[in-house]
Each structure stands twice: as C-alpha cells, then as structure tokens.
Length: 305
Image (tube, rainbow, N blue to C red):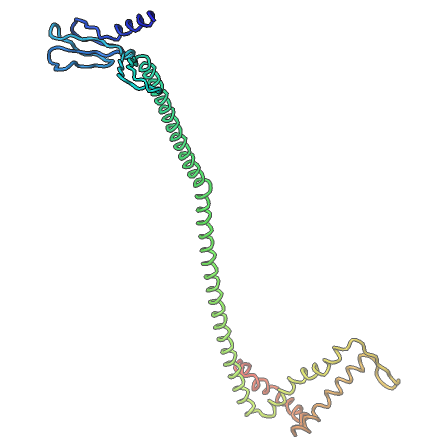
C-alpha cells in the first residue's frame, strides 16, 4: 500500500507543469506541449509539439508531458450492487496513456493502410495507362499491317475493275463500229453489185433484142456444161458401179461417157419440143456470126472493140 502511494505521488509530480524562466525561441518534443503565460496572453497559450518565441522577463513558459496526464475522478455516494452507498476516488492516468498509445497506433496503421491503398490506386492507374498505351499501339500496328494494305488492295482492285469496264465498253463500241462499217460496206457492195448486174442485164436485154436468136444460142451454149455437170453428178456420188456388157458395144469409162453424150444430144430435141426453138439451126447460124455474138452478149467486150 505504501509503495502504491509513493508511485502515485511520483507520477503526480512528473505530470505537473514545470515553470522555466528563459527567453527566445523554445521548443518541445512531439510528446510535450508548451504553456506560455504572461504579457500579451489573457489565458495561457498552449503549443503542442512545436516551438514558440518567449519574451524575456515579461513572459514565461512551461513544458507539459502529453504521455502522462493524471485525471482525478471523485464519485461520492455511489450505490453498489448490494445497495451500500460509498465514495470512490479514481485515477485515469494509466488508462489515458494506454488509450493514447493505442489510438496513435491505430492512426498510424490507418495512415499506413491509406498510403498502401494510394500506392495500389497509383499502381492500378499506371497499369490502366500502360494497357491503354498497349491498345493504342496494337491499333496502330493493326492499321499499319492490315487496314492500310487492305485499303490499298481495295483501291487497286477498284481501278482494275474500272479499267476492265472501260476496256469492255471500248471493245463493245469498237465491235459495234466494225459491224456497222462492215454492214455499210456489204450494203454498198451489194448495191454496187446489184447496179452492175442490173446494168448488165439491161445491156443483155438490149443485145437480145438486137440479136435475139444468136443471144439465145449463146446462152444455151453457156448452159450446156452446167447441164452436163448436173447429169454426171449422180455418177460422181456413186461409190461402186457394176457394168454388164453383152459384147456388142463399148465397156467401162467409154460406155459412161457415151451415155452422158447421148443424153446431151437429146437436149435440142427436148428444147424444140418444149419451146419450138431449133437449137441445131441456131448453132449452124451462129458459126457464121461467131464474131458478132460475143460482143453482143458481153457489152464489155463490145466496148473493148
């Protein structure tokens, strides 16, 4: 009991403010406070954990420890659980010190957590910034490696398509122009040919009017080779021909030629029977006028003479 009283007195003396005479700038630690009194202060001025200027003679200061602050608690006539009134005197010095330490530790831990959280936020923001820069880099790389070549290829294909379209149009126009020119040329040629044939037929008609019988003979003589060719045409299409002879005439090619000539010799008789024109008579007469007939039938030869 005596030891407890001694400790209480010692703690009370340590916590009591100490008056210090001095002047100038005075400082105190973070666990202390300056109490300045005197001139210029109606009430004592408290400066916790810092410094202040003290004027000599007219001011004085005291240092108070913030670690041990004794608080006397007096409770008079407090009724206990059993109903007995008592008076209690307590000291909250140690509890206040421990609470201050715990509070300061909690504040320190909270500040550390806040700093860690800020560090994490900054790191997260930096990661986001790095990711955004990486996305921008990939977009630029994609644009440089895929988009721009694709646009260039698209432009090239469009130009090729336009060139092919123009080429097809020009080719179609050229073909149409060639067909038109060809048609014009053919029409002109047909027209010229028709005019020439018409003129030739007109001149032949005039010649036939003048040399009627001789012109007919000349036309028949020109037609005879065609008739002979038409008569011999079936024989030319024959792949195999078997000829049987009774021994009283020609055999082989001479026989075939003789038959063609015999058919040709019957033509004047058929013409005379069908038209009444005697080809033999005209043929004999044409021998006398042989130098006249060609010029009469062919107007061009007449112009040459």
